[in-house]
Image 1: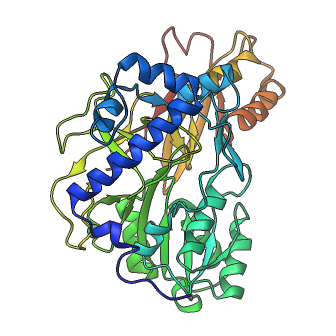
Image 2: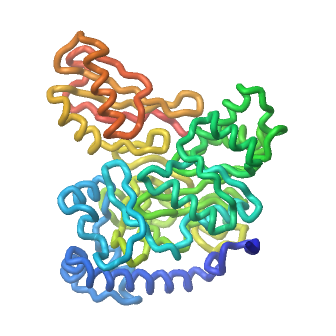
Image 3: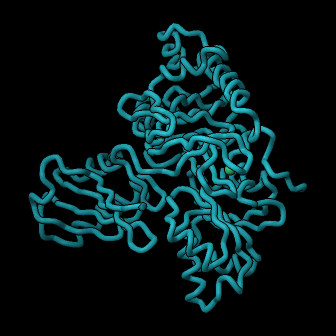
Length: 420
Ligand SMILES: [Zn+2]
């Protein structure tokens, strides 16, 4: 496979006005198709009295409601599998699920999902890349895989294998790149060192593209300075695919050419002033899943001005935090909806999830106030098991607290991490 040029394609350097016009055209096409195929969208667009055209598409978009992950879960519960947002006539090759549950039809194979990010991070032909994202049910493994294939890299689908197995693969296969969460790469390096390897000297792994978890500056410095690994951040959401990625300048995340991103006030759904902090809201024009204005729940702002790399897209200034209560623990969402579901199985119980950071790893403590006290482990074991099943993330420490500890109006999820 021939190596691409400096940019993944010509879209990355088009003039902003041209980008805007082409996106308006794609958006209008999605709106018209959605109005034909989805009675729900048709009713919504008709009620606004605006015909979707290239000239009206952005105005119309701004009048549609922002849809949160919580809202999609609720809508899909009422109308499975896609809450009336799917194209019933589309040929769907895969259906993914993510915690909630949320069902997501895989978008077209022609969409270069994640490939721009890998290209900008220098991944390409000749690379052997460990893909440590899960391939099981969720979209992550296979979509990152296809992005890597798109840039010509060889993929080792190591998925959720243990750190020890990943070390063996890195050694035996001459792995040159890693994609996954930063905390897991740190664990893999730790495992290699435990086994007596000098990671930098013994292995060829020199680049990493991370997603699903913030990259703390101190951890980035450690990867780059101690281990000689060039690191890149990628940003997306399972509902809408890739959203933004870092280039070699590492001064912000370029918006992907396939998505329309708005930064809105989470209270009103209206766009904030350029450069102000707000919720990242994403629409990905496509002909399979008509999700307009997906509210990621992430807070960010747009960086004014152009990047020296030559790409003309706007850049996101990282993620500043989460709107509301849902938090990501080790790359997985824990949402209040999941805890409410868990509560159904334990009537009269109260519990609170507390997320902290221990070294470079998220640490999840769950405080439990059972209905009856004092039976210790037997009482808590079924709870712990159910928690892992519903929230898909394992509890690190479980604490039984005395009655009355979790007073009226307590927060179900407390995020005590600091990313600064
Ligand atoms: Zn750039």
